[in-house]
Length: 110
Length: 112
Image 1 (cartoon, each protein chain N blue to C red):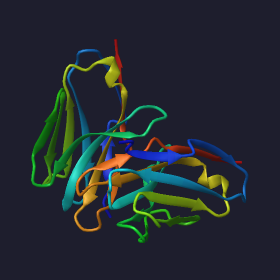
Image 2 (image 1 turned 60 degrees about the vertical axis):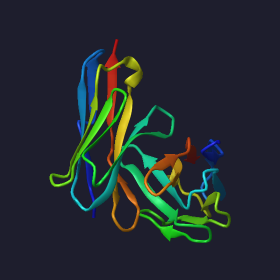
Image 3 (image 1 turned 30 degrees about the vertical axis):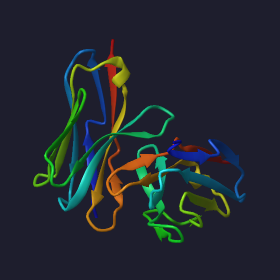
């Protein structure tokens, strides 16, 4: 049981490039989340999903897109990266009660 | 909109001391509250979960309490150890949408 995994762990992008972050969970959870964590701003919700095939916007969705084609996977896309998207990105999934987090992806946009 | 505040932002104590971390929230209509630990460069690890109907939860040297009416939760750490050094975050989940609001965390340093 690997829990929540994220790939890649680190990435450096140039402004305007695109990339996809992958989150996978093996706990059969319905709910999955993408957060970003920035110094002084805490954890902020980007997008979330309440089940396979569903997605919804969180607090800071602009510049990001998501897809949940399979229950175990939740993908976060950046179509045209900007320096303001430099952050640490965390994926989480949850049971009816408790959230479980992945190890994070550290993204730098130059 | 729910707002979650954690005070103090940083705390340094000598080893062996008992300590209390605070978490306050503005909207008392919560579903549950979860305490996490985050080590530098790592993800969040769940410590304790308190449902809205509960008053406290205990795990080893950790005890978390919840007072919905006053919008407060405390995390009590007994006999602190250097290995407890980390950032502790609380997260409040609202009743309907299932989304969580996080505090900014308290960074704890336990000195040997």
